[in-house]
Image 1 (cartoon, rainbow, N blue to C red):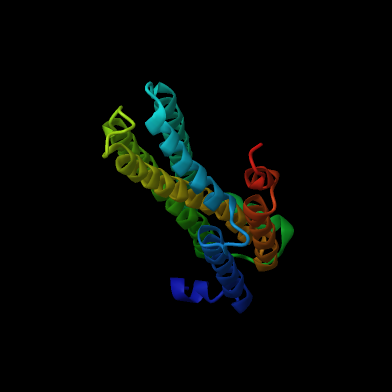
Image 2 (tube, rainbow, N blue to C red):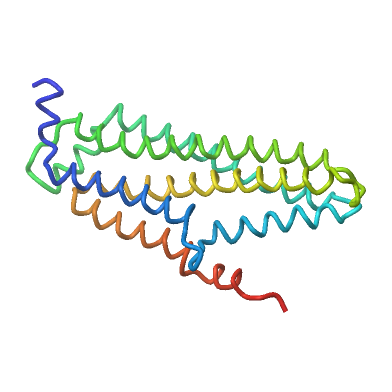
Length: 232
């Protein structure tokens, strides 16, 4: 049998489940990045805090503290990028040798699953992980741009160039954080996509769970409540 014949083993429910996964991922991303003014997400709330950080930086004579914070942010993006490389490598290795999955499936059901079906399912996971890797790498690079702009901000707070340059650094900081958050969401949904190995209904359930986790952390979490509290 050729590959096309094997792919026919994917049922309409399989395709619908994957479509649901992608739709939830895209919809949540839109809701988080562009929420309503009445119900801002943690990402949007933190963007305002990042801009406030750069305004405060202008007033500081010594900015070692600011550089240390930015360095820790870059380390975080580098860590997740390297983690994704290992995860992608593991998934690709499993795609090249699906016998372990075939053996597990044989113990659960008598139906034989073609290797190409396992590869397609793992391919979806690999695509999410690759997307996450690219987002983390870009976030790391934009944080680097932000560091350069921060270093270029004049030390004199009354310098007419100080605040505009600090605001440019703030916007780069915000963009880097947005890409970092998008990378994290792609990782969450990569874990959800693994559920497809157990069947389409399990994938639908995993999508609901992952979607709820992502939504609740952005719109119904304790950190969000803290960010909304007025400073004393």
